[in-house]
Length: 302
Picture 1 (cartoon, rainbow, N blue to C red):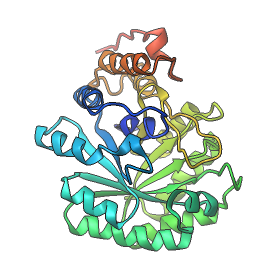
Picture 2 (picture 1 turned 30 degrees about the vertical axis):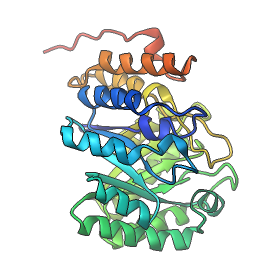
Picture 3 (picture 1 turned 180 degrees about the vertical axis):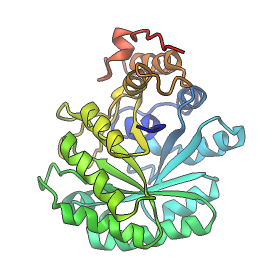
Picture 4 (picture 1 turned 45 degrees about the vertical axis):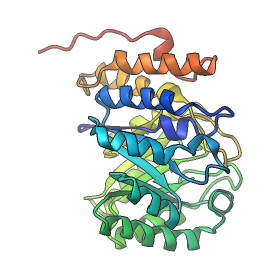
């Protein structure tokens, strides 16, 4: 495995399904500390309607504050449509993330559009983002299965990937929205994307709904994925899927990588500290392991 980038999505994916809204000053504290820990990217929020998803109502405000601070990590934001892109450009989001669900049912629940229409609109929106000089990442959501539809045809997933690549969009996330992925499937899909375009920059976004999250993450990395999207404490889950469950925990992945001498530049105790604060805020245990057990201290030979 080459140098793996860590994309922390806790402030967005981790918080979007929570019943209580986290105050802006608390979010800022968590984001600043995660960004300072050495992870590569932090997803601050999503540009959706605040009345529909109040947990994300302060996304514009967060970016206006954080962009001025020039944090150590690259900041990303999720966009669902053209209006969201306008807002993201207005507040200076450096990395704009957007995507299409390979599940027709999930696509309609999430965006009100079918997969075919969503693909056309997202590609056009992504190209506008690139034209504006921003980094853009596009995703295939429900790529490995859907809680409503079950198995998603592989050719449908690769058809969306091929459309992205044809449009010149080469930063692609394969998202396991429903948590149905298994390691062999993840490995095969990453390899197939690289067969379509060896220069593609692949991110894996894996949920741990059925306990195969970390195994699938390692399969993605071994197959050539460049980045992994994780969440502090394993918090999160898409509110528009049938069985929502959390992500792979950021500190668990970093701990695993550091045990083999990778990503020693990331401050693991700092990440664990953030996760402990998140757990205290919500007054419950989070799915992650290492923040509860403590890390294994590994001596790396010079």
